[in-house]
Image (cartoon, rainbow over all chains, first blue to last red):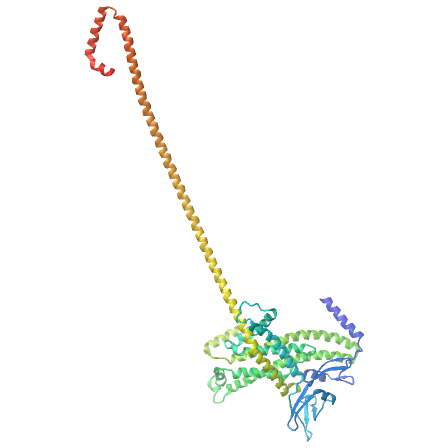
Length: 373
Length: 173
């Protein structure tokens, strides 16, 4: 193992030394200066077209439809190729500055010169990635479901390897997370939590795939994690039991804590919102952090080469080694974050499914047991 | 900064893709898979239980069989013992009978011998008597060639006969 590793490192070094003049022409490389923030933003933010790769001097790009609704000029529907041809602007829409809140998003220039964000329903890079990931999920589960439908009631049917694999995945989430966290009412929430787990897991894995259908960090985007957290919020609070709401509005605390100043109900109400917000931030920050770390490690190579060839070569070796480590770590994180999101969602949903409240004495006993363990 | 701003367009597309995937999977895939996995689980559980029960029954039957065989062995032993006793008894009885028979035969033979011996003795005695009579006759014939001697002897004899005639008579018969 050691020897093989050394050979790989030697080859990497040799590659760097013998082909140091290979240019990494990039729009971010303006006059030799490397704009790290631009590179990272370009990868992490959404975009109106999907830049796949560069063959020679030719960019391979998927131009996606731009759909805009302006309050003054109505609907606009055009290909993002127009934006590319016209230096980023088209039909009175201009990209927002990088340091603003809507970096690179199209803004409408009003007659008075102010920039207003129109309603933007464009099928962006991330939207397309979402659709692709959704399609992958359907392709993964529907054939297995069809097999089950075909062999319904036939207890002696032997599942194929693929069906067993899907069963294992579903069983892992349902038996490992959903059932123990929610309890007897789990059936109602199982489909949502399963979908959420596999959606996040698929998106996380696809974002690690460096070529076309993957490579888009959708779960590293706050809109996506916000949507998922919102779903959990709805599942927790809309389907919460009466007992759950009673515990929020009239918790089991000394009366002076809830009347006349509703201190505890206030804290509990805030808790309703902090839980999904924590879910949202956790997934977003974890995925963003991992991707950023890998991007920065990669950018280090360019920075190294902009300093000197030797520097660049040694940076390449270091960067590749660290990136391999980061990649392995991110694979782990891809699973762990999907797991954690589903687990916490299930715990929150389960905590809102209280029907028989335990006596305070019993509860205190179980609590001390838990802390002892 | 722009990283932290949610985008309505992306939310819309997320709603579509996640919503469609959720709807399809929740309606057609997950309930189907979980249900049939559960069914299979219960089937396997019941099968395992059945197998366990069958095993227990088998063990019980085996025990019963063993007990039966043990009992049969015991019975066989008992029967064999009884047969041996019976045999012993029969042999003893036969031996006793044979001994008694032999003794009886021996006794009979002895009695027969005794009787024959007695008879032989009697006939010998008779022979001896007649022989002595003959000898005596011859002796007397010799001695009693003259008349006087004859008469003297006759008288003497007569006297003797008269004296213990009855005795002599019984001995000769």
